[in-house]
Image (cartoon, rainbow, N blue to C red; front, side):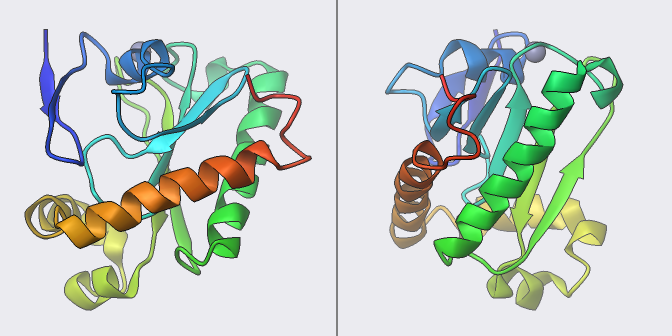
Length: 174
Ligand SMILES: [Zn+2]
């Protein structure tokens, strides 16, 4: 069994696959960061990094690639990316986002919606994606403060309300 330190500093058991573990624990209040679950995806705060508004959209099925998805899943995915970013912008969490997914053997499919906060570009330069390793270290070393964790939790709650009230995705939410 594998344990990982979550963004709020707690050690949590993630089993064989973090994506599958998030799906399995989605209704568990003690598991952190859950926003909404839809038919085919979960939306949650990034498990490890305490970056405000850093959301991860993860498939419910253990897939490695978008190429394995049905057309319904693809439509749901792109719509969730769009609606989640638009909602975070509306909530004034951050005005711009990088969207990233990685194909890797054994990697549970997930999309990162990474906010381009000024404090990150100030620390890392404008091409954050070039320094992704530093970004992870910076977030773990500097952002687990009481004030920042409070902002992260507030965004989770506000985004949950916003997405649950969204007309475009309401039929997918479970
Ligand atoms: Zn998995």
